[in-house]
Length: 83
Length: 148
Image (cartoon, rainbow over all chains, first blue to last red; front, side, top):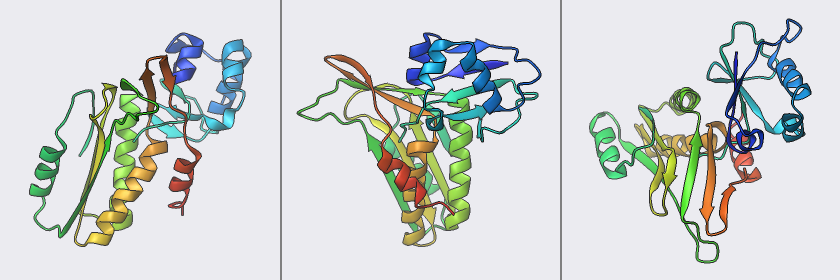
């Protein structure tokens, strides 16, 4: 599955996305974030305050406890500043 | 109508077309957001990053919610992304209702939601370089007052 990063998170990671195959114990989006942070020190540091981020699954914003099974595209969204 | 675009658009033309499409409305409200630069802290451009597929989905959901809550006849959002210079239109919301209060409330609701709920990220281009615009707690508060 693809994981997308946006705005200053994308800049800090120096890439817009990752292609990942998480192990079976990674069930929810929250699990996925924990797993991603454990394998990337820069991401871990950038997400020190996880509560500020929203997550999307297949282009819909969803709660962190949403399952990832069958997802094609997950995105980690820093606080949004539209309008 | 929901449109997420890199192209410049004419708010007056959008307004007229939207109004002309609905003869049963007695009230129409539109809000237009504009790139601004100030004398003490000038910017040369505002660069909006976007996740277009998610933006279209979320804006459509916010629009449908506004129509249902305020019994609007219709509502529309146009939002740009890419590089915009001061004076350019960033976005526009429009609401149509039988009477004015619903049209005003619907437009306010749409603005309060899309400030923090639509995937756009602003970056200011200044003489010193680029800087990300920080999310404002007031925008979260403005959105929270509609929670139910």
